[in-house]
Image (cartoon, rainbow, N blue to C red; front, side):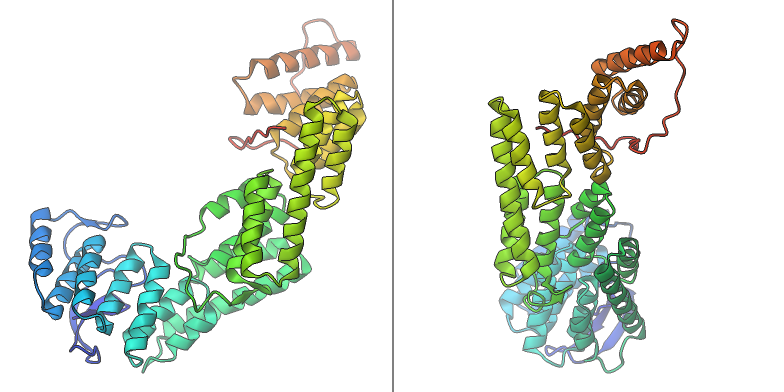
Length: 451
């Protein structure tokens, strides 16, 4: 018996060409869930059925030298949702018969359910190498490549079926349409459309595609939604090993893996994580060393990081004018770096140049609206300039986001009193102001940054 991509168990001989079916279903081979008999906990790969029964199945199979018996035991565990145990039995079956394409394909099914997509692709590729006419392995590869956003590879393997799966074909056509629209929108800088098309591509089935997820992060970055860009990258699947058939596939003119590292470097730069940004840019360069965008990014990351280190050293030694110049040098290579603007704002304040400090804080907040340190620095600088209305608005926002910070609360109280006096209002009357300032922060989104 073999597991087909739809989740059915198929009886077969050793060459996996017979397609007689049984009626019971397992979990779908591509990661959705219908686990058949019993009450199964999805996602955990564990059945709530008797561990003793599962143990007996494993014990019997592990001492068997009959590849069909071991494989069928693996199929039984797969059907029950015991994917790690099923995988161990498929490993045993492959040890007995390394050239058995059906065992390789079934092992890929278990790996897929465990989220190990790179290994699943490798097993399916080995299955079709051993048996080029093995339709179920081709179908499984088509579904895997759909998840990974590799349209051409998915089409290639889907075409091997005697009867093309119309549902999978429609998904591929829809995915291709959204990727093309995304590419067109990216070229003209329409980042809202890019974001929409990325989400549509994922809905079309490309849920584990690193480059689509990275593109979504790039769109958020361009829209100055830095927290969203950062959180999206957390969703990046670890595809290890990355399928060899995908390593040289281009995405927006850049090799897929290189593009993912490229975006990670840019997001880390935006947050001031200069060391990791450098590491990601170097990885992108190693993969796609001839790409101009990658080469430019690596050069700029290094120059910005150098300027940041120099600026910090100068600041710490009290050479504030020189520190301003150093941060300005870094901004020549990355005008969208909120950290450098904020650091330079601190230097301006040390020199008593409060207007320049406010200007750089505004630039930082235009890039990163939720940048608490820039908001704090602007509030202090506005207070120094006796712009009490602006200072109060910033301190009100900070109080809302940092309710336990006594220093911020006291600063707000002083600014409110100064504003009252400036207006000539009676003592003790403090008007409640509406927080309508453009840099108002949403709840639970504060990210502090060190100089």
